Image 1: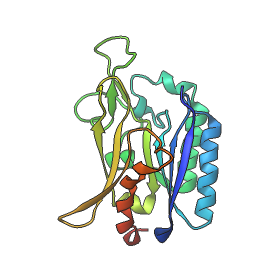
Image 2: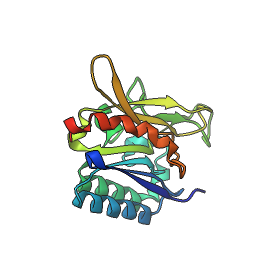
Image 3: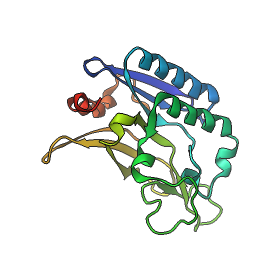
Length: 207
């Protein structure tokens, strides 16, 4: 069991607000409503809002392939999550870039190669869950300029978490990136927020 932790970092020079959260297990609809409320207030005040973190739920069917029962009891939260994305004009960066289908018909080839695969608590050693519960939600105007990569955590096959990185090329010789570091909210010192700093160099061109 984990409890919801949320922190907000404001970068004044670029009117950028980054909301990072680690939701309850299972998530509660009040968690989503609270994040939505804070994000709306920031947008009304003129901030460009990015939301990152571990929401402990898949927001489309293809993201919980073979384990859809996990999301049945979370239907109100999933609905609130998708309403939040639509209302704030955000997109899930991974799904946006990889064009993940809403309803999978097969699990072959590379159709889900960018998603998280694991077999923790599976009924058979041959079962492999596919999940996507960590998100970078980003304003539509910026989404087409960003890419994502995934890196595997230790204990591959036992977790549905990976580090989720978003990056934007700054030139032909260099690139800049920010990252949702695994699925943990940064400590009080915000030491992990160093991963977000490089994006300051390029936001003025696209927001």
